[in-house]
Image (cartoon, rainbow, N blue to C red; front, top):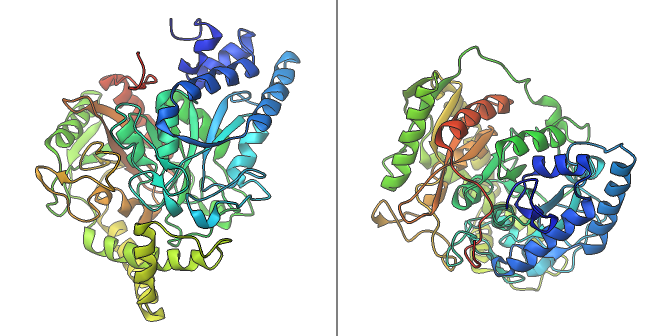
Length: 472
């Protein structure tokens, strides 16, 4: 039995909305809900998704929620719902290793703003989730905690760098989790794991306390969930300005066009894309057109050269700068991060300033090239999940994968600071999930949700919890 009438031990199957209803109706307690999720974590331990479980803190939070529900005064619709937080986001009193041996013993003293808001809403913070070192890889593994695996197939990766959160949500350990996205790190794992992943507009989810940024304002804190309804609910909890984050005070107000116009494309600069990805994007465009939207093919509003050039310089410099604050600087770096640090040694101040200027010029060019559309529909990734032991796919579209192939459709969004949403949209013939990406102008998350709702209704892709390591 599944759904809100299932036994409480099966409550890990529920969405956040179903759990909230059961809590409100008195059919389950927050403590029982936590126990169900902890049981699911034990059953799916092979995923290696959670790296630190705050059992005492979670039980105390659940007990507080139970008291509020008994008194009929829950703090919000997410009061009592278990959540997880990526290990590069500060949760006061809980280790934040950033996936690095150099931060292995670091414990921040305070919450970042998004975590403050979750606590204020009554959510039960259960654990931190795995991330590659400095959140700088398309594959979630590191020298501290090892490799995280995809719940659809344990031989595959859930992607990176928010792969731990993606795996936990997709497997039903929790219905919701926080991730970060600096080049596709929420959207890519969401696509590979068959869930929703939102990269909000820069500043939409305020932040102030955390690890130093590695690339200007490219990274944001975002959301990963199994249902669109839960996404909208948690977005309402987390979104909004805070004077401690000046960027959050500048986000445009959402618009409400009478009839959404959709522009779609499935290639950029002629780089290889799997046929199945093109099929899923095309089917999504057709579904939206059948739903009454104005849908038309458009050219990609960006080229890869300047995006990748600026990204490479800024990230290398950011990695090198981050090492200056490492509490254990003599510990080894993983190969990819060490390579970036070495590259930074050859960069000058002139090189860095040139990259910043290139970002400004590229932003101007992309903004000017945006087509006559309210929302763009495009791939998240050019391929589906690859083996967990590889840093990226070996091939794409039948050809050897080019360097940084997985960022071809995502990195430009981070450079612009636009909102983007990965939506479960289909599967490969072998069953691997494949999402599509919706992108809008700043502040227009509402339009993304509206289009995603039409897609969800038309495509009916199942995002129920899954774990290939045990019987269904």
